[in-house]
Length: 179
Image (cartoon, rainbow, N blue to C red; front, side, top):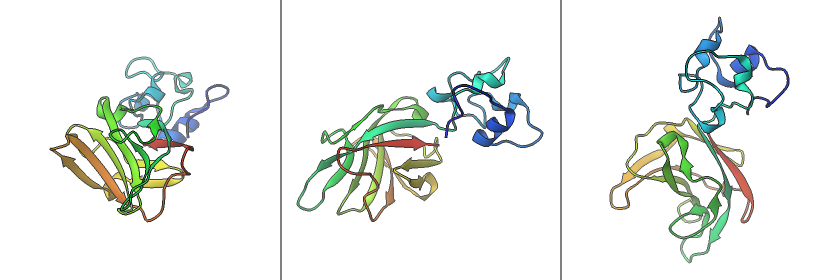
């Protein structure tokens, strides 16, 4: 949850959002350090130099967020819900994955036959950069995912077993957050 965009803000609010160990000092909260992700949400937080509490208005412990308009593709053996660039299913408000240097999200979908939710991006990237993907109240830990690079398709994928549809429904918009 993001810090407020205005009003009173304290070091305790910042600690509540990003963690840290006592005694607290603002210098441990530079953007891109160990506590504050280097994401667009946190662009007001400096990476070095002078830092003040007001720099944290609107900051959040997120590495990437996008809005998913849930699409649907009916198939005899497998129906797909979510977003898939190749099959023009659904859409994302932002398909540029911030925590992977602007790699493009190719897939964020769930299938009826496979009963997995898949998150795939272009290129061969490391199994790092996020801790949890959350969509429609469902949290998926990166360390619980199957991680795979598909060299013939040139994409990296994380996928999780998910027996039920993780999205709110076809045509609905679900916010997907990565922390």
